[in-house]
Image (cartoon, rainbow, N blue to C red; front, side):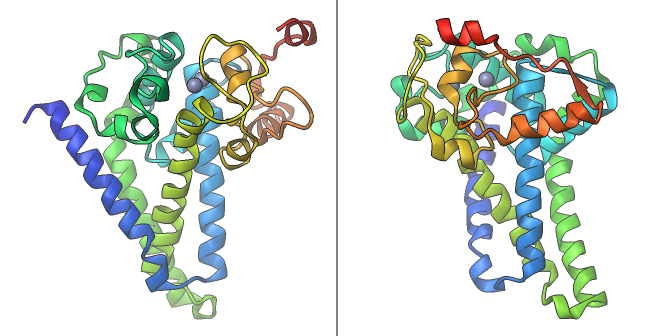
Length: 283
Ligand SMILES: [Zn+2]
Ligand SMILES: [Zn+2]
């Protein structure tokens, strides 16, 4: 087996294990605290992917400082969607070669299942050179996030099990346990976010409206926009890829944009790029 074949096989095994582990919620039952942790972690990991991996690292649609940059990369890494450099490299290729055989998750070329999850189980997606993410190589802490990706996965398993165990010991009335917190806070929360994110690649290149001619199959899909924290306005995004705002109209709910505006007010991010109204109108 080659290295990339081993990596693809381990992703396939990981998908099976995580989905099976998420189903353990029917065994552990629920508690308010476990559900709350799952929701909070869905939002933290999700924003790490949307604001961090996608709008910041892949598209540079705003500026931030070195500490905040690391926190965005760390939050995105918690989502267990691959290391930051790997994720960004594939995403930049997605925009550069959209709907061609070099766009590894094009439903038009490879079909819906491959676009959703199948591509991550093919050895080809681990054979990238990473030449298109050289700009990120000058940050050793970002390279470290990529290199120690597996430890971020294992660390979360230990953390959520320990959190539930400690809460069960000191505050039994909460009704949680180590296993319950682990399956809600990590496995279920992560699996649900996976499918929300993956739907941007599958559903949002197949179903929805396309107000702009972006030269590809990208669509706006309101359901994915809600689940994926604003990323479902994907036709807008393909037309204005450098924009930090994907929901371009007040009625296009874009939670990531709302959070970025709050972070801007707090002075943590700056220079949020958005298209001018005239550019939107003429598009
Ligand atoms: Zn796309
Ligand atoms: Zn993008």
